[in-house]
Image 1 (spheres, rainbow, N blue to C red):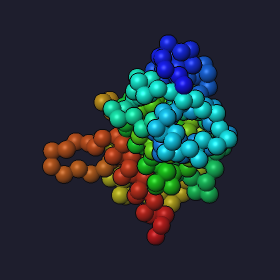
Image 2: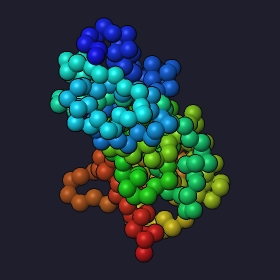
Image 3: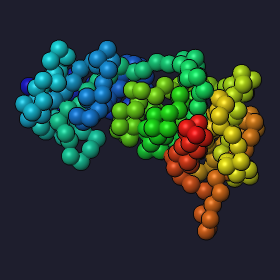
Length: 255
């Protein structure tokens, strides 16, 4: 049993939790908790760290995989939550190409420019699965999808929703438009999103929490759309707005 945070393996786990640079370098990320542990694809699992109490309760879950027992104090020090569940795992990062993002019969893609809040990004990934989106495209300055807070917010959807970071998101949107996608940017000067048909391949483009989309990215889309507001509300949280748009597309396609 590992009982000290000075153990080299545990030090490495702490680095993976805190440093996106280290996650990129090693090609791995961290998931925590029994729900996320149970979602890990077998081929992506590297190693798990588990308390004796958790292991005794879930012994069958560790058959055929690599794991280490750790003391409760080590788990508490590593954990990103107030009440650790008793298991933390190292997982190989996922890899997708644009063809997988566009792979559905009638693709629905969410494109994100400079989204910074981990909770927002994780919620968008989770909602994308729920609404049947085919994938997510992100600008390089969007938050790290492997940030533990993002991973936790996805509730397992990170393993099932294809995603891709691109260097030129405006260029990517133009390319998709040229391939027959209808592209829509969420914009305060847009037309009501209820006025459009989302039955064809669709891209919804969402911008930074504080500044919205840059002119270059909004200008790359076919249409600017607006979610109508009542009262004094100017706009919705980006994760909420993404949900509204994705579910309207799902509603139309379900009729």
